[in-house]
Image (cartoon, rainbow, N blue to C red):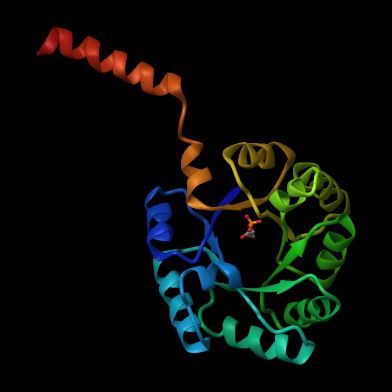
Length: 218
Ligand code: G3P
């Protein structure tokens, strides 16, 4: 399972990269706004800075909603760097745009996926990734992990090449459960990724090892 970081914050991306386990980055208009990135020129500059930091795929989301403008915006984003994957929302126009991008060799991440039907359509249209939002499903009392398991089953049975990129991850248990049920990729903020490291018995065990060593050697 690949690990992407879900942020547009350059410091956090650099920190995740330094861990040696980072495979890519996902952004969205909310995450770009959180970093104060305003206007197209600044957005392009920011994506270029992310591309310099990370070797893997970097999702950059369109803000257009009509087919023609999704296509022109997506082409502009894809031209920034070969690492850029154009993130397109799961709408009728978005679906048509994903088919177009697939036909011309531009990779896509179909975002705002909340059902198996949407995931099947995105795969049929040739999306490189789909982003089911598991935390937001949990928020409305649906089981986000159950959706990932269902999609992993469907994609395996059907032989779809589209990768399931579990998004809207809120905690380390989400990440572990995604690994169990067959997500191809998770994207998460830095904090849940770092929380995977933590276990109280690791800390207690290390303290004891060091104390025993120092008793004899100091
Ligand atoms: O990748 C999608 C993600 O950024 C949404 O997360 O926590 O706003 O549901 P959240």
